[in-house]
Length: 276
Image 1 (cartoon, rainbow, N blue to C red):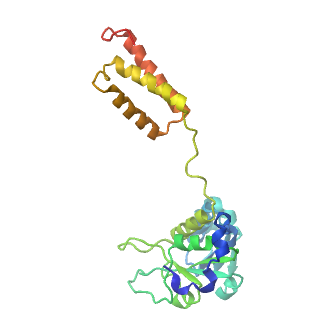
Image 2 (image 1 turned 60 degrees about the vertical axis):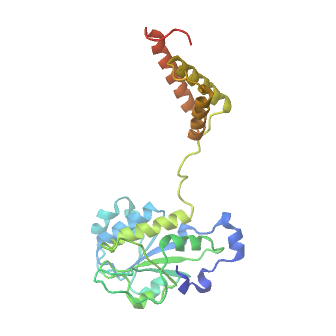
Image 3 (image 1 turned 90 degrees about the horizontal axis):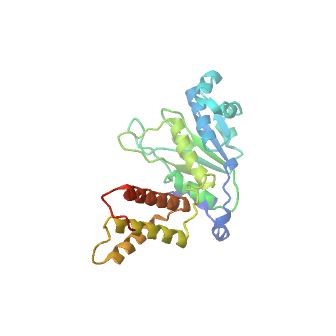
């Protein structure tokens, strides 16, 4: 996707591919640019979405309404980001400093008309990953249009790339702040800002696992669960299950305490033999 308008501005060099571990995309390269926004509350909501995803540069161009009080209601903890916004009357002036301008578009608008665009749009994830592999750090503008009709074709035609967010066919239109959040999220991930999804936990040692296996085997013998022709096969199966679980030392201790507790109940019960 997106190959139609790529050209040299997005091509990654062999050197950059070799430097995959040192990807250069930084969140401070990226500005969110809002063009002809109708409602101040949406500007505030965009500021909040940006702060959630680590973006800090908000540019507002020719807003129809920009009431600080109305915006602050939706900005919540991002009022400071909203207050630092840069406001322009001219889109050309606002976009002049950027090396890459990315326009947001939809293949289907609320009125059902198909857009005429000059290049195939990317999905946000695809484009974020492509920019991630560049060896330089260009300034990037993510450009969003007005709430009801988006960016006009005359603006889309001048963008270096387009992105579109896939949605369900029966509800294709996203709120402005939702669109910003979804795009910002993908760039947040591409910049490597997300925390590791899972904390690495220590695995139980072989000795700890064997001690657990012996205690479980002893318990199973006491309740006659291993009184069958091939008890070793069942024990091997239980060991495989335990290995797949990748138990931590703490989990092994809990399971051993559990087996000892059951053995204690067996010792106190007249229905089981006393021998282990």
